[in-house]
Image (tube, rainbow, N blue to C red; front, side):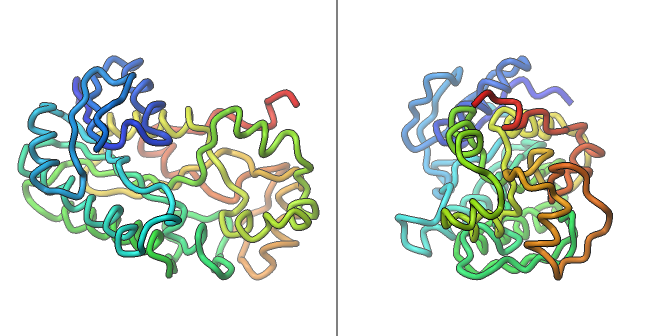
Length: 296
């Protein structure tokens, strides 16, 4: 189904402008819905708080949206009270889906996170059972951000059971989404062996995020593909680059860092520890960009 108008909540955030431009390049009119209402790239701006039901309902009605991409959530837990972090992820999703249901909007794309697995911002090691990680892997978050993202997905499950809810709901489990300059500074210039990552003190976060990342342009392409998808119900999708953030070969990485995980198959070169097979199968998306292609 064609969606001539897409409302993007948080179109001024970290991934928002790239998502807006990618949707525009595909031919959609894009309406930014945000507290600031000040996107310089969107076709139109509507000011609204995504956690406020009246605000959001009015904004989507004004936008005359055919699809909603919900990015208007906090990108990390630092700097806000825990209940605010949880509310930003979970309550705003309920409001978005309820408004979409009331307004007859058939497609909603939600920004979930790798944090649902119990990684990301967890103080302890992530519990990794099998590799590569697939959508069926157990979820064990304990921090407000990860719990909020898990709740977001449960809320989407519930709406998918409603008769008049959006027909297609996608939850995208994103890792860190750097720009090209950020990739060059973080990955190309420093020593990216596992031993060097340990020495710099970056190991805990790298381990808990499965040494994953995703170029913003690839993330935006997945958002677009899910906005155009025709599957029914709610589906979760892992999203990650095809390779890891380390120069250590993946087979060695698994042996050294995840010795207790059950490897479902052998790994080649610097292959990602996150499977994106489901996204390829259901919406035709594959990651295309790698930090290894950048010049030092």
